[in-house]
Amino acid sequence: MKILLLASGKDIHSVRWANQLSKNGNVVHLCYVSDHKPSLDKFNPNIFLHELKFKSPYGYYLNVSQLKNIINYVKPDIFNAHYASGYGTLGRMCNFSPYMLSVYGSDVYDFPYKRKINMQIIKKNLKSANVITSTSHSMANQVTRLIDIPLEKIYTVPFGVDITKFRKKNTEKESNQIVIGSVKKLSPKYGIKYGILAVHHLVKELLRDKKEKTRIRYLIYGEGKERNTLKKLVEECKLQDIVEFKGRIPNNMVPNALNNLDIFLGTSVLDSESFGVAIVEAMACEVPVIVTDVDGFKEVVDEGAAGIIVPRKDYKEMGKQIFNIINNPKKRIELGRIERIRVIKHYNWMENVKKMETIYNKAIEIFQIK
Image (cartoon, rainbow, N blue to C red; front, side, top):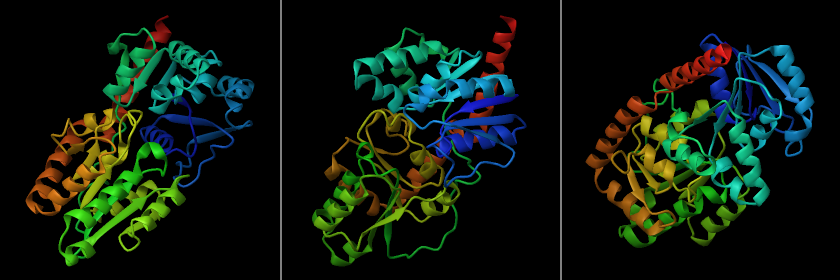
């Protein structure tokens, strides 16, 4: 297949879809607005990258002519825009079929409700697509709340993990330490501050022994606009010796980082966290996950059957669950085993990509018949 993707060049989701589709023998082109240049995670050299002239947000309107020229030149079998708001707007205005729109989360949960015009835009974008895909069932349900479309018309394709790379490894750990971790952008919606407060509650209220307190480490991977605010919170809580900001790391380094953890925290506070890739990656590495009750997390951990769910923003309950896992090593191991089984069954990346290719082929076939 000749596939034209319209997506951010600096988003790991775009990188992974493009790279794997290319590895599977497809010809892949990717277009992105000029302020979404590829950065930390790299594209395979045989992927054709097209930078559109104008930056977001105006670029979602001003780049139409250039994108149409690229489409005429590439002559793709299918055109797939990722993210229903910005790139969905640009994709809609190109009037190409078959056109697939992949929804991500905040584009259908948050964006439509900010302004009346946003709701009009998102409805137009969703209705313009020949095919809609979602990474989770909960997000597919959200799409049906926005437009009149049967749920069975929305294809759910999880953004899974490479289970050969994300797996439990024999790494050397300091036996006297309990390492807690998060991997997420430092933005308010991801609730990292509640992870910090949970650790504060753990060491100040729940752990009585001084030696136990010195064993705790909380590693925060990611960058974002909330970094300085979070660092101030760490100082206020006097957790400088416990909490460490590790910055953003490339996706190929995440498996090793996860294997150094004993517990993983998913602290998001909004339902627009509609899937939770980092949670799945930790589960694949058999790291016990404690997550908040946002829609995507509940689906991934099977309502608590393969992980622990706490109410969003309830840092005391999260601290309590960390305490319980620390004091029950057997439970830690069993949780990890159950999580790995669930990932293999539902979130095997290679199977997810095959499903996406099947959907592409089906859309192309229907279009050719028409």
